[in-house]
Length: 288
Image (tube, rainbow, N blue to C red; front, side, top):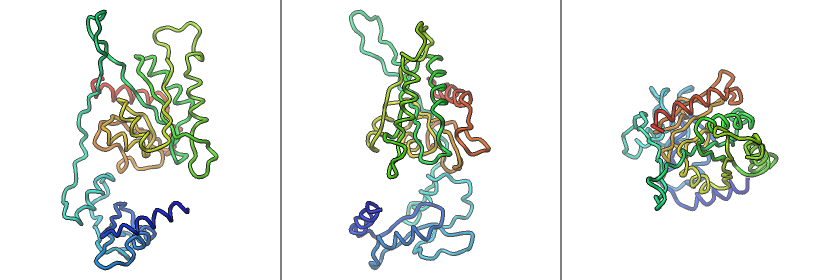
């Protein structure tokens, strides 16, 4: 709480002219926070979306209509809000074709041609909401299926820390379960070419570490959350597992993707076979 108060005071000291509230949900709490940041200075504005259920917009200086917006993605809502600043464009949602970068090693005197580096697939296991958390056993099974298919390079992403940390719970225990199950010593004593190999560990304690790590993979499998949208911003194809969030509003933006969601709205109910099929389908689309 103290960190939030400090952040608000720092924002207040910036002397902003406008505060933009791009969340289409009308929120009196957010309006009050925006008013605090503006500190009652003259010629300042709070820009936000109308409250359509009751037909009011108390506290907003510039009201954005939500007429015919039920189909919009959050990115399109953001652009719609920019109309208040003279930017009148809502982007299309058709993703571009993304081709995996298949890097090649430098040829040596003993090589007739450089060899291709295996595709790199990230598995991000952390999620804030319980309904967005895929079980450790499911990630293990998925990793084995992917590795057995063609030996792709797998990287395990997670938020480090303990589950009982009230400020920032982490997934060290879950990650350890997955890594232990996929360690070479845990595999058969007589491996064959299709056996799973070790998976790389990528704990990300900061946003910078997460961005750096995601920039080095070719594809991501994750639940709906911050990592999904960072990966989309980096142009990565994504297999997204959805719990109780809206796919039409929060699906990966601007990249090829597959989304999976069950009637229970619980990610844990998504079968491993369906996720693996989505990975293979997306890879084929992106010419991997």
